[in-house]
Image (cartoon, rainbow, N blue to C red; front, side, top):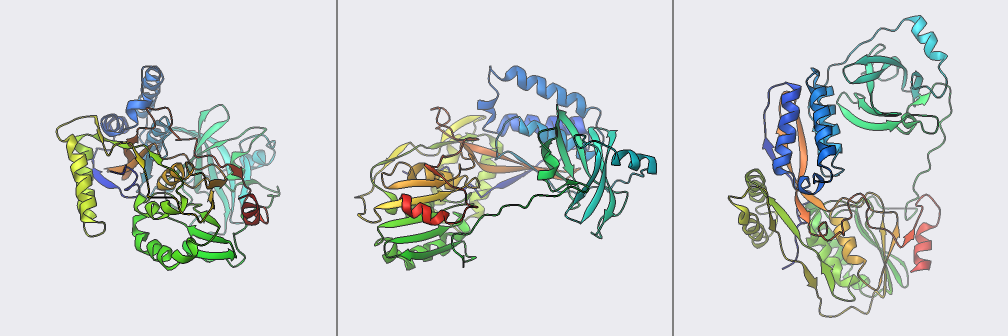
Length: 462
């Protein structure tokens, strides 16, 4: 039976978990829930890291006891989540923040104009849309407030705070942005060597922003479709697979069926999976015969069996009825219910196995797979199989490194409204020391997609 832990990476379910609006209680409810249900906790909080983890939690709890505002409270939650360095562990904020107003005096503005280029405070602009005063203004976790001076955007008026900076370390800040009238978090470094605000589009007033180099498309008349095949020359075909999402199964299947003759006659095949993330390996199975040269080792995954996780997945599988094969859904149900009555046990989602096909296809004889930093989840599972083929060469940039902990559930909170995605399955690669999280799958040949002729270079190096 094939290892199937990556089949539902895009599909997530919800647990509703309401709490009163008290930051200390809110923070504690989050960390207690994740300690019970987040599969990565068992690997990331160990005897080696326990002291660091406990100190971090104690510090955040002390800060939470003094916080009254919802946004700064959720910043503490976000800092907690960052400890785990897991791209599948994510905070989503659902409420609309109240716009704060600050009145700045003329002497304050004059002083900001005199700030050295290395200072954090100063006057900034963003694409002729905004002019702001970034002023030191401690409040709660905040160190600096960005106050609108001029705006060509009707939603923002002079005196309103469009973002905040909260110090998180030496020269390091959390950015709390309200730009879209929602709360978004980011991190920046600001010092003599690095101006993190520039990367977010905020330039010192009067400075010139260097032009941004853009990626060059594979073809001058690049189709907008996420799935298509094109014959490049007499011996080379190009196949674009922009997503392995289960919702696209029949569309991708149609493209592969319509071009099956061409896919099997070209000596060379280029498969472009850039920007491809979560989905189902039912689609990757269709590509396997084109890549296969020898048995492929597939490492399975385990499900973290807790009452909350089992309940969530059961509900999720019920929602997929009619969208995916019944026997496949029933197989998954049987697997997760192995954990009934358990709290915090890993239950196998399928054994490790050697995937063996009848025989390698003579053509394509060489296959290039194009990747970038947005390839994650199912795309990375596809890459782990592809690199085991003798006919495959990987081109591009390192993938995202977001596969070891996968298949997210969602826990929801109210007052304020927010939710947290958390993974419930773990690849057995982790225990084998072969994890790829925060590392990614590495290309054999690195490419700069901003350079002309990068596709031609791939064909030459196949």
